[in-house]
Length: 410
Ligand SMILES: [Zn+2]
Ligand SMILES: [Zn+2]
Image 1 (spheres, rainbow, N blue to C red):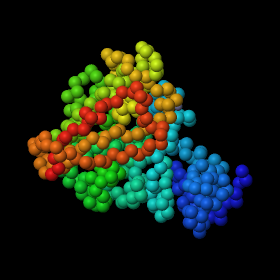
Image 2: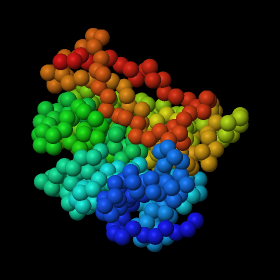
Image 3: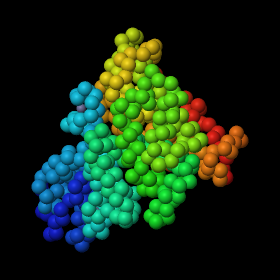
Image 4: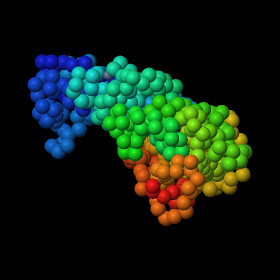
């Protein structure tokens, strides 16, 4: 391929910027529309007539932008996620073969000089330079809240090294727990509502809006939930489930500075039950499909079960702290290493009904009526086909058990 002549004006790509995002900024800098430049790249790169994907020709874009050859590939690697794969004994690491980029998200408009773009850079929703919340196309000033900056550092630091990002499920789980707890805790709910009013979003709107309102708490809670010692107690079959539900409640209530109540108890019970079912499924995993008696190693079995049962907490369990075996009959075959290594992580399937807000937040007005909350906050962020697609013999938590009638709309 002939390297095209660079456009007159060159701009520097942002850290982790996507090729298409860069093209979107390069075009106006040179007096072109995005469409014109994209069509030009399509013709140069002989891309399909309809819907040409400029991500497929980074070399051309590097030439047009006057960048060094291989710029995008070299810099993308720095922002690749930590994964657990067979090449590193299923412990977190950045593997050249298996690491994947984060799902693209909209970048801080001040960093991109006002032209919208997308990046896959390490971290989550806050620009630490400008103190702006920038995902989902939003541009919200969070400078007044120092806890947002601290949470962002935690996300791009410790949590990042555990393979946690906006799309991997742990934050979604934390937000879900916090939203339930807010219904039990009027003081905390008021604080969250004040933030929601200031940011101009709804606590009960899209997941990203709820995340914006409780971001510092969600990150703190995620840090607690994935602590290996905490998780050992939460998910080991050695302990009583009632106690385990209580420690989950305590963790959530502690982050919010409240005590928790009926709503939090219900959702904690559902999450613990589902995660424990997934742990038991891991103990019953066979080495491969078609193998009759040989068990799968627990490290791999936990990851396989986390994926099949959409139970993200299992990915953080430390097998050294767990019983090496448990009385679970071999029941299903773990997928091949190659499938697990490249599996795209998805959030937990948390679409069970959340109790609707009740006027009586003390939780004394339990209602066994038929009213169901249609509240949904957990979209699937990524369904690229390599995600949690179960094999026919993989066990599933029975979703019907999770559809409970929890309360009545106020
Ligand atoms: Zn690997
Ligand atoms: Zn910025």
